[in-house]
Amino acid sequence: MKLLEDRIKEDGIVLEGNVLKVNSFLNHQIDPDLMAAIGQEFAKLFKDQGITRILTVESSGIAPAIMVGYALHVPVVFARKKKSSTLNEAVYSAEVFSYTKNVLNTISVDQKFLTASDKVLIIDDFLANGQAVLGLIEICRQAKADIVGAGIVVEKSFQKGADLIKKAGVHLESLARIEAFVDGQVKFVEE
Ligand code: G4P
Image (cartoon, rainbow, N blue to C red):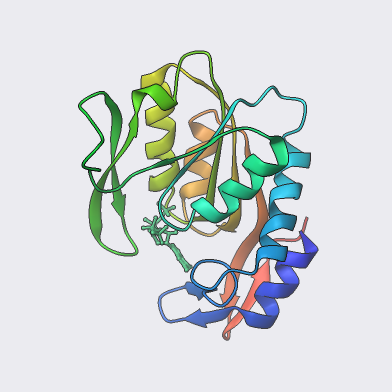
């Protein structure tokens, strides 16, 4: 998605350890026009597939997920990382290890918001090692929901996440695919 790649080139900052800082427009301060365009793009990529729910994980997956849900007119569910005081026992849950943050989270979704009759589109902002999306896939499988695909805003293609998701049999669409960081610049995968 050219608009997104251009914005990453302009405002993204490459940090030590192959981390791309995009907090001026994607995951801290948010550009709503760019996010709306991201929602439209995913809606186009996954149109006519009978999607009934968008599934993401808090916190920075929520913004793109809402925009996709708005474009497709379907509800958006986000997995929680902390137990909500109103979340009862009836949850689907998965363990997600964050390599970048070196922390293990249990993510969970109330069973009433995901059912065997759902066709789910998983959305997340970053795909690196794939643990977050694999956790969401696990939750869909517990619910016996059908997974239509996974939509990622920024894929770091040099990390193992994309392969793991494809190996899990899930159709993957990423709007920006980063091949490498070279001298502080972002090199995108050539389509
Ligand atoms: P994964 O997201 O594919 O599971 O891989 P990984 O374990 O490496 O990533 C852990 C967290 O770090 C994720 O956020 C992910 O979005 C974020 N992350 C990974 N690479 C980058 C990067 O280059 N730039 C930025 N800005 N973030 C990156 P999270 O733990 O789910 O937290 P949240 O921010 O969504 O709350």
